[in-house]
Length: 172
Image (tube, rainbow, N blue to C red):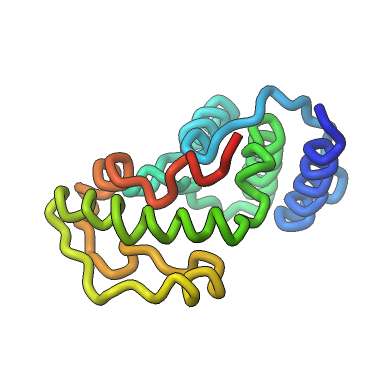
C-alpha cells in the first residue's frame, strides 16, 4: 500500500472515530478497498453481519441505519459503522478533488449522456444546466437529478441505469 493511501486511511479512521464518538477506537484490519458503487451494499452486508438491520435507501446509493434510542445500543451501532467503514473503505481516487479537465468531462457527461439517459427513462430535465464555467467553479454543483422528481419505486433502477458520475471520471 502506498503512503498516500495509508495516510488517507489513517485520516479517515481518526475523523470517523470523532464523528461517531468512539473514544478508544479498535484497530481494524483492511479487507479491501472498494469502488463508490460498492459502498452501500458492502457496508449494509457488513452491518447486517454485525447484527444490525441496515437497509439501502430507495435510490440504492445510501444506507438506512436502524433507529436506536438506547445509548448503549447506539454506541454499538456506531462501533459497527466504524469497523465496517475501515474494513471496506472507498478507494482514495474517489476522495481526491476532480481536476478541471475531469470536471469538464463530468459536465459534458451530465449535460449529454446523463440527460439523454434520464429522457429514455421518461424524465425531462428542466431548466437548462449552468455554464461549464459555473459548473467548474461550484465543483460539480449541478446534476440533472436535482431538477426531476423520481418516484421512489423507480429510484434504484434510474440511478443504476443513469449513474450521476461515470466511473471513467476517476481514472485508474
